[in-house]
View 1 (cartoon, rainbow, N blue to C red):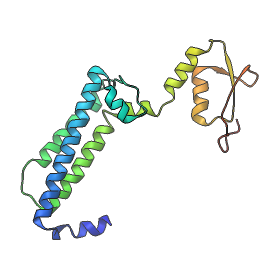
View 2: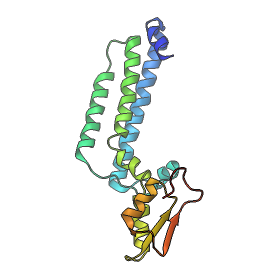
View 3: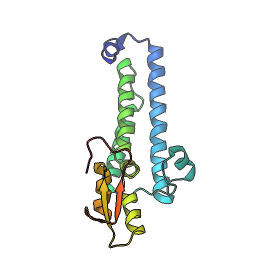
View 4: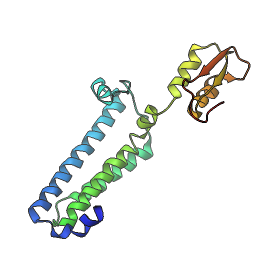
Length: 179
């Protein structure tokens, strides 16, 4: 479908092309401002509770770590996007270029300054640390039917073995994970 549309981009009427161009500039410009603003708010004060509710499985107060390289890369992406969409000769191809650049900007910002947040939502680190804090240091934990991520929790948090007093298992077992 994209290849057919790309071949016919030059036949798009000028009014439609202009509307598509400005809609893309406004959409990705506002998304860029939102991503930067939310990141700065989270960095300085923690993730606002209202945004945590929107993201559902996020704990309010999350603060992303300050990392120079991702911030510089996001700033460069933002500056490149601004240089690309500045008022210039408009054409049908320019509208598509602005959309592609806008999508690259938003994706690039999520994969740089918001990557630690995305990783924190998909990690078992907090579970392992909580488990280690709530069990005595000399606790031995056997496992049964755990998947690879759950076995990593056990290895990180506790000593393990097959002759332990405590057993951790999943029901129903993960297919092919009979360890």
